[in-house]
Length: 466
Image 1 (tube, rainbow, N blue to C red):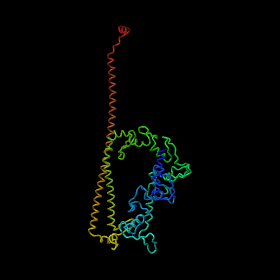
Image 2: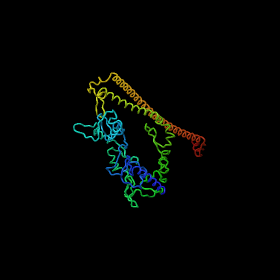
Image 3: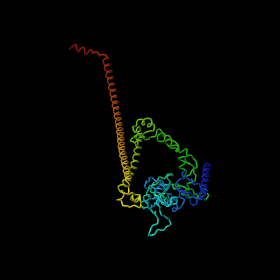
Image 4: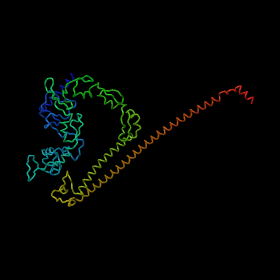
């Protein structure tokens, strides 16, 4: 009890320091302050893991910073060139570049001024300027709605992933999930304490019930004082009498040390390290280290496989880059256009806006040395692509050869096992024949050594009469 009281006092001091630093407000996950009520005598850390989303405001005022989201996968063409994150409220400039609205407006406040960050084109924009029917004075405008829909459909992880939430869903539904369904979102506990005060501690939704989850009770294993919020953490990381039985050695260990034991237990069953290359063996870690690792062909060739796989990944990446470069060069040469998010510009417009935009004059505007340089680069890229294709074919042949050798080795092992079994069977049959021969020989020797029986007197008289 003394230790718990000291810990609560320490957390209380830290909380008061945070409140004084933020104007006695609540720190949201986005670093913003809120004027929501919070008792001064309640520590923020009401659970072992306090990082995540806390619902301290009303539904309409609950702040969520979309820039703190963790994406499952991010297509590069959907990233803002400034913040390098998927577009949030995308705006497009008159020169064809797209940025987040807040990002492009922040660049206007920099020494660069009202210029495009990519091509330095002067942009006219005033946020309070009214648009008229005759002319739109702003050179930046909202991007097509389909771009916003695509970015909003990107898969993101829950902000409470560090607390154990496994939810993955579209970005547009993250707020609905956090507020309405996530069991790890923390809310202020509204239960009345014995002193008549509201508890007020931030508590995950899964712990809220009819009773206050912060009421202390004795641990069923060791007898220490815990509550519903800290029970799971206590049993897994602190309790010394919460035992778990190992499936390998059948011994019991405390839960807090069980994971370390399981990672070194010699009796527990594991898969062969060569599983990813085709080995289907499964057995104890002891047999793996002493016998199987030295005999498995896939383990012996794993270093070669990893090297070839790394080379193949490098070749694939290089191939993608070369294809992209070739596609860009071909588009610029054969079509005479360069495309940026759906806005097509003639090469003449890019090189000199005062020149004619007629596509038929494209090659007149290009100097001969520039055209020759482009063709040389195209030939170099074409040669590199052919080389990569030959290397890929060679790698596939080597992979097939190694697979064939491994299969042949397995067949030879099976044949050796069969021959060994046949030899063992023949050896047993020969031993049986030798035993029968010895038994017959002993019987013959005993028969020869036995005395001949004498004839009876009656038989002799009968012989004399004849």
